[in-house]
Length: 220
Image (cartoon, rainbow, N blue to C red; front, side, top):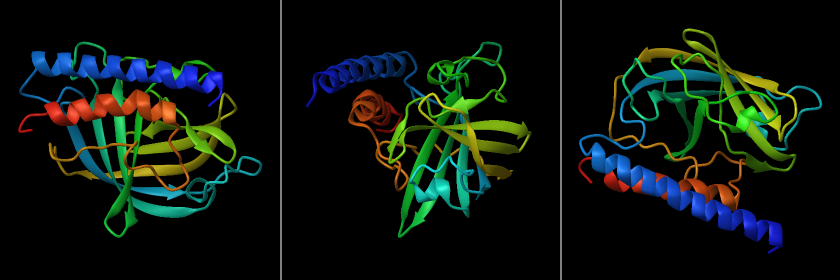
């Protein structure tokens, strides 16, 4: 393993341990609720993928090719703070893959600039742009996904390779709400979509916090 890879992996491991510790601390203060995304609204939706634009192909068929997916979406506030306070808004999406399998995507409010797309941005409005924050490994390089509200129940999806320009590849239309379901847990590390590979340093950064959140949720 190259020195830069070892450094990134080591830093991600330390970061993951820190995030897991923060999740445990929140669970200790708020034992009756999940430490992350304690409340959320589940809704159905249809994702219409138009495919990537000319010259923006990633080598991932799910992104590059047109298609339709009947998805499940959770809209939530990450920290569960009172509505009068800013919070990090999240949109989780579950895509069925057949044979009782599914892929999960997690988006959080960020900026969309070359650098701000990698920075969380707390706010009051859920209409702010969201990204996957951390990239996926693809044949085209590190790819970040983004989602942006264009109406109350419609979202536009885009992708970017590294810090490159955003390219639209689909639209999500939400249907009626199905209500909260505390048994559903979204995990993009354990349930990636085909072709969207998880970097080792991303897994080391994210999975400890997800594991802690699952272990400390009420009833576990």
